[in-house]
Length: 304
Image 1 (cartoon, rainbow, N blue to C red):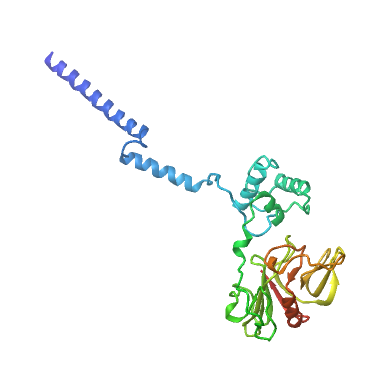
Image 2: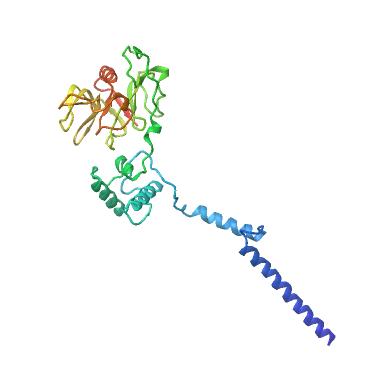
């Protein structure tokens, strides 16, 4: 009897010990955010972190912006997610997929129609501005000090209030070509006139297009006019230097336009550096006069 009693006591003790170990393990997992983690809990946390890295990042509540380029049907990724989130927020779209699908194109078209924008189903600058997802352009515009009165560039042309020359000019962008050329950076609304030895003769601010019709790449000056009119016939454009043909007319550099009705300017020189045109690059009078002399037919125009 004593032997059987001892065996029963030992068996009962083993059950108690096993139960206690199991409870401690469960308790540690259940309270992993409160108590110090055990080895098993660390392993569990590592597994969860790895899965999170593999999976999609959760949608952020912070406002997003897209790069300064148009988003088109067929594209995908985080920039499309940003666009779709803004469309959902403004009740133009129901679902965020990360793909610029038919539903997204329909939503963009609906917004463009309602806001009286150019309707093409492509989310460009104007569409992104309406949705509040376009970057702050002013952060990319470099404004150099106003030159001293009578200051000239290395070719002897007077500098405008938004122009600089040589070492005082902002550095040329990377991958902007070589040799004698014009370089137009849309993001910063800046033009450089460069010599055949890659020296900056002159750099100045312009007012370029509000839309996505300035084609990136290397072009050439193909036509020039001392004075012409805008495509809608409402403005005079002096010192027109054309480098791109479009369906509604030419795009080129010219002096700040004048209204045909009363000969007043469409904008001030202080507003250069802001996108205000329908396609062309508006310039201060002194910069337009310089470019008219510099940009002969065939001059390369590098657009970034």
